[in-house]
Length: 95
Image (cartoon, rainbow, N blue to C red):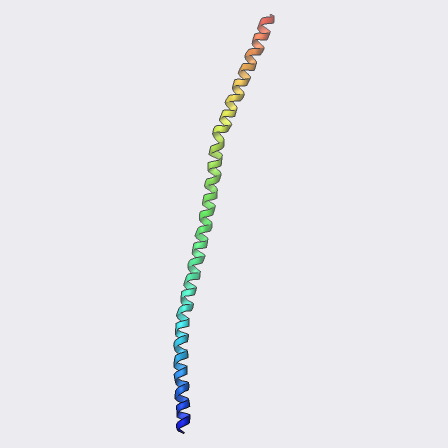
């Protein structure tokens, strides 16, 4: 009878120990869940930041192309004016 009591006591101690481990694991599980939620939030914020950055890059590229296009227009106007002047001199010289 004493042996059965000892075995039961040992089993009871093991059950207590296992319950403590389960409690610890539940807390770890809660922390992991919280970390996963935080990672999802960070990933979402990173996605929005990348989209915002992409929009800014597009705007910068368009702003950088404006002076280039304006310079091209000025060069074209100068060439047209010079060509017009040369044609006027040629026509004026013949008349």
